[in-house]
Length: 389
Image (cartoon, rainbow, N blue to C red; front, side):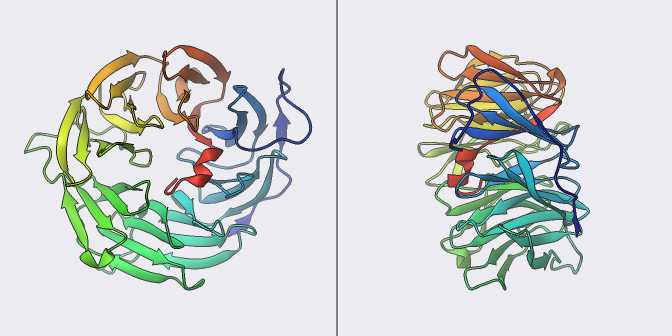
């Protein structure tokens, strides 16, 4: 592991309305500028940028989690970089390069451990959240004896991390409740090529999507002894799958009442799941291949963005009627959406338009446009208090 030189270059953005002196962190967030290795710290209440921080490496598939007090953001870069950003001082607090190729991470429920999922070398590495000193190294060697890429890493209650092995077709639980030596529980044979996963908001169910075949793999974290159950098996019913230009993401999955909404791989559909029976409750035809299917807080709407060549469009689904009620085009290459904590606004990254657009979720009016260099992920500090984010 390599430690980056500090301090990093910080470019404050002098904007009208930026308050000096003490401030809270509850209305802050990060916007990833994927092409320049930089992040913007944004104020969501006033809809403007506070600072831009460079030196975070390859952010082409970056994700972020937050400390429990919302002061620090942990940025996971594709180059294996793990960077702790101080949101109040607008600086890189610590940075290490812990692998050759990583794909995301998670923070434990008590806020003391940060875990990173790696492609190269395949496995999960765990660090002390305050110092970024290494705590554990978990090689992802499947039942076939080969090392696997790791995807779908999430936190779960009880100081646990859950993740999937893409190449081996397995789900593992790493339990740190007894200390810094994790207890590993393995579930092989879950299906071909799990590509991403989610944990339900109550922390009970872990669901991995499958790229190599139709269906999803469900693990009850309250009763892992029951093993993995397949749900929505063969939802394509023999139909030819379209070429997949961008893998769907399950992280921001949508739960509304007793139903969940997930993207169908290689299809212009959103699948609806009955959460009591874990069976298909419907499917909704949409504009293109969905990437993110995200519920507005409160669950009344689901917002969907799409893969190339339909990635200039966003659709809004009413979760009561299961109908598309609004469609609009924020701009070229919509990559991510993030709702304010109570859902009154949504922030949308428009990569090829070099901007972030802010919309009213009730009227669909555009409220603001913020310049950003090739923006991708948008992450607000409210995530610090949600399981699996």
